[in-house]
Figure (cartoon, rainbow, N blue to C red):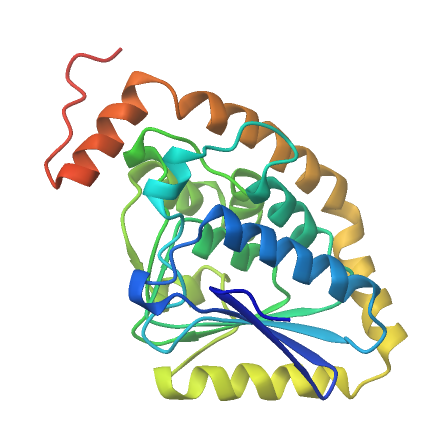
Length: 257
């Protein structure tokens, strides 16, 4: 299966799903979210797929949402493309491996929370700038991050919205290993193939058990965050923050309460 900006390839029972919009730093559009949701949903029911591998390019995993596309057609309910994408990845029963290098922003970071193994380029820059854009965390990150790294570290990343290094991501438990950018894809593929060669039912049951005790809360968190996120997109803080970002100026929040 291939879409203009999402390409999939099945080989050795590993389904590779690649962001393929390098000229826009793999910024995700509604059409890309739809293609991703369809790929993950199909993988769940395809017996030929044992592992899903998510990749970008060596210099860019994904810059997150394409803001122009996102603002033109903002998510408005549970059946919007981004919500279908989130649910399909969060509930994928087969193991998911990710190889991220270059930059990972916004959903490019939070989607890693729903992968089973993550390999990262050692020079990768990560960022979750939700608060600085006048919006709130998404993809169950407000639930998963504190449990992964503790409240203080999660609050620092989500409240300040500052970029952080791959080394910090490793220290916080967000990724499994750091590698030279040129080795990320090959390593992630090798790990995916290693899992694909193992007893498939044992792997699926192991993943189910790892996620069982939190999956219901993850799904609840996705919906609860999204309700706030969608409402906040239309509020003055977000309008000022996003306008300033698009205009390359410093936002002014001095008049807000």
